[in-house]
Image 1 (cartoon, rainbow, N blue to C red):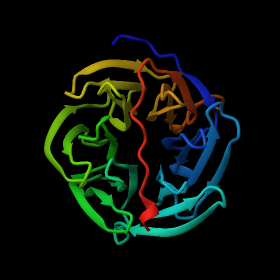
Image 2: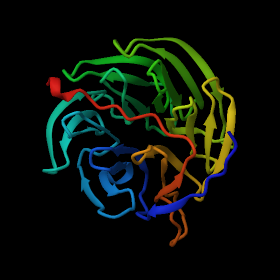
Image 3: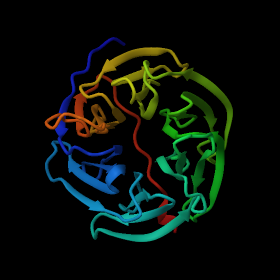
Length: 294
């Protein structure tokens, strides 16, 4: 499919590192985080109705739960947050709390109802010491993938049979066979290896036709790959560092993309904003964490 995308800045917040956009179809709104400021944001799809919450223990990614609460990954723990009261309800799990040089990064709910979240190494000399974890509603934590520098790019295909996962510093994108009933993964396959010029793989989303949309954070692009790893199209982005795409709206054809604000960005530039365009293809529906079993 050949098409061009024209992005507009929906929300000019100048976030340090805006990430993890997720569309809540019940509230018809967008949630996302600013990792650099430890903040969780909510806004309407027009950019109106914006509110934010700030946390001492950080805000690294966010996902939806069946109860209407949110799953929030902080630096080294996963909690349930109630956006109606503005309070953390409970802690679900602690992850790598004993490791001061890693923190939680990208996370999403899988077709199995569990929360999948990875860590990243924050030291100047980054090493493959991070991992990808599966967190169940009862708080059980299982390490699923090891030897990662910066776990990222989680997304599943429409029927939940394929898991995509990337390492932003690998920099590579992998795919796995996924069992939606058990969360088991197998048959790891390296789809593509990228570089600074082609766009290190940051956050990602999938569409219903099998496309994998990866934010090329180092190259100012949004790359769309086929399920087999073929680069279908590269979309130029209006600011240098897009961080994650998200399909939103009732038809899931509103494409929202977060971005970060590089050091030295021009005073009036919209770097760190939330951008919007229309996609000709719908995104895969977002899953919810099965917290009603708690």
